[in-house]
Amino acid sequence: MFVGRLGAWWPVRVRTAAAGVALAVATAWGAVLAGGLERPALGGGLYVLVAVGAALVPAGITLQVVVGQVMVGALMLAPGGPPGWVLAALVGGVVATAELLAAAARMDAAAARDGAGTTPRTAGAAAAATLAFALVLGMAALPGLGGLVGVLIAAAACAGVATLVAREAG
Amino acid sequence: MSGAAPTSAPRATTPADRGRRRPDPRLPAYLVAGLGALIVAVATGRDEVAALGAPFVLLLAVGVAPRPPVRARGQVRVDAARVVEGDEFAGEVLLDWDGEAEIDVALAGWRGVTPVEPLPAPVWALPAGRGPVRVEFRLKATSWGVHDLGDVWVRVRRPGSFVFQEYRVARAPTLRVLPTALRLSRLLHPSEPRAIAGMHPTRFRGPGTDFAELRPYQPGDRLRDLSWATSARLGAPWVRVSHPERTGTVLLALDAVFGDEVESMEALARAARTAWTVASAHLRAQDRVGLLAQGRTAAWLPPRGGRRARWMLLDELLSVGRAAEDTSRRRQHRRRVVVPSDALVVGVSSLRSDTFVTDLIHYRRAGHTTVALVIDTTDLQPPAAAPEDQVAQRLRSAQRDAERRALEQGGVPTAVVTDTGDVGAAILALRRRVQVRRSAAPAGVGTS
Image 1 (cartoon, rainbow over the protein chains, first blue to last red):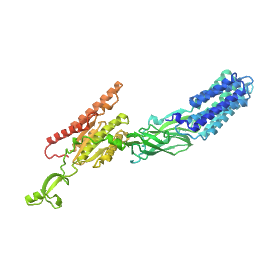
Image 2 (tube, rainbow over the protein chains, first blue to last red):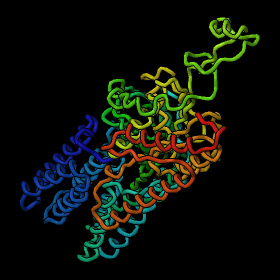
Image 3 (cartoon, rainbow over the protein chains, first blue to last red):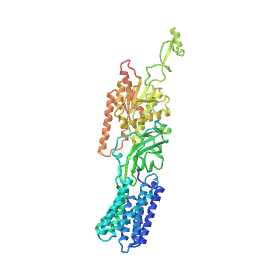
Image 4 (spheres, chains in turn orange, purple):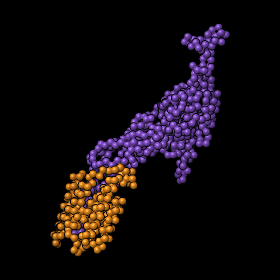
């Protein structure tokens, strides 16, 4: 009874999905500009294509996130890759795209859902993801055992933050 | 046309009411991305890869953190219990829940109606907030019959949660939709009035045109009733006594247990045609015709018949059918109505109700002339595809035969109304059998 259909593509859903795809294009464009990809056009194009598919079929969000993650990982592991803040911004872009596409998917009911609140929620999730990435990446940069311990501490900190946020939301 | 505003009643919880849980599309995405990156980091021994998984693990933990389930309650009200085809009617869904939640509401599964507002379907996406909430809708009746207005489903989640709950919170009331005047004329056209018209002059006497007897004048008699010729011949005032214009009382005991399928609508139409044929013939014969349903005299048809009488009859048939299907009403104490002593009770039944046969036999034992017209719906059943269906159909047929035999043994003559045979033939057969019984009955036992 809540299954989406063509008639359920309300303007607010179209706008939200379009914003998600636009963000995916911007993220892919950023990754191409950052360099480091062996085939930049292929990587970026694939990510955009998957994002468009996820806008139409919500189950595709998993693929969009994984492809985005692989794209950022390839940049990160490439010799002479972009600086950490660029990678953090790209991770934020991937998360924001997923949040927007998921918000659009929730608007599949045959009634228009108010889109208010989508932007702050997306921005909050992207900011949290960026910070978590930067924190753990910074700790991982520590040499030797310190890096491993740093990653564990950062991961614990992320889990703590997540618990606090969830308790606040609940 | 309307009625008492019906409201959905509380009922037992079913598995559908408990609903199911659905994940947000982000849940599998963040799970795969977070855990995948951590596994790759461990497998490759590169700490920085763990950083790629950390954001997703963080967001996943926030999304799946335990939250209290949303317990929503609902009720549906519509402003009419019965309408005519093409009529629009309004209704509202009342919802309440605990805490803050994001809720989609849908009125789904309606039949025989189309939504007018909201369009394209009665679905509402409510912003995150707290209850209670009232949403309004308008529907239009599109086909006659008894229709379910569906169920109210909700899709709820706590803000930020990655898990939805989807369940049914209320069942909308049913609606009786009567046919339009044009369809009514096609459905219930007067037919076979000669079958039973005038078959039972009553033993009661009163003002009328049909001569009954002469008797000596008594104080209070009208002067216009004086028989001048008899008075002159006998040398004392004598008056004419006539049969009243209303010659008898006929009660149609209705029983229509049908579903909502197209075949059932045809069966219902068949029952309606039969009942109307009996009613119109008796109305023409100046009888008082009442509808006896659910243990009460539901209504007396207008003496002139007409459209209003047909609507009343159909409305009562639809009401009876729905009441028989409604299990909550079966628990109510059934009381048989006391029918007038001169009443002829005519049962119209598909013999699917579990109380109809005993009711008819009760009226017969109370001394009323009682007959039954059995609506045969065998030809309307879908062809049995599986052996189980064939067995089920045979069982239904055997049960109907057994109930018919029970009626006959209880002194209630029966006749079957089929799709091909006209109603008049069945009524004529019943008439003959009643006349035979009357002629065999001892003198002094009179029925109307």
